[in-house]
Length: 161
Image (cartoon, rainbow, N blue to C red; front, side, top):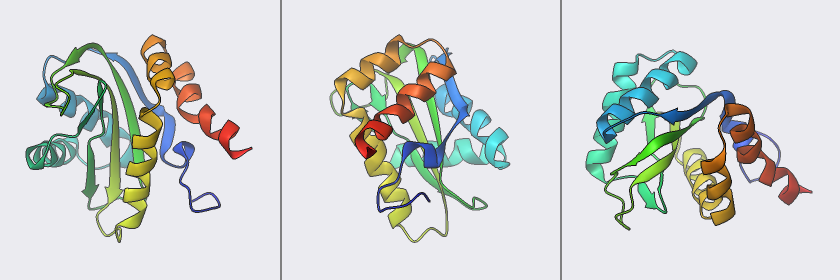
């Protein structure tokens, strides 16, 4: 963890954990795509990740509104919190409270034995981040992982200064 009580986006997100213009026609397909990407990073079988993500959605959809979803799960075998960002070519229904389809997805995987606060801090940080309309529109107009990573991590540097 970097210093202070606030978690930073670059504590949990790597540039290689960003996918853009994903073509997914359903929530289930999207969660499988995210699981495949996450599996490469954390070494947990994608089928386990996909199953956990789908079970989490059954508990309650993770669409937070304004076209954003934050799927989040705890997984056995993880040693630290990992974030994955995806943008979709076309928005899909995520059963969000505001009924808006989703095209920006930030997935959080946390260690199962995590006592709770770390993954809640990550969730709070990501939720706060996506409440910013300007950030959402910048993310939607970005074409590549480089620029997405810069947007996802830049606002913090200016706030931290």
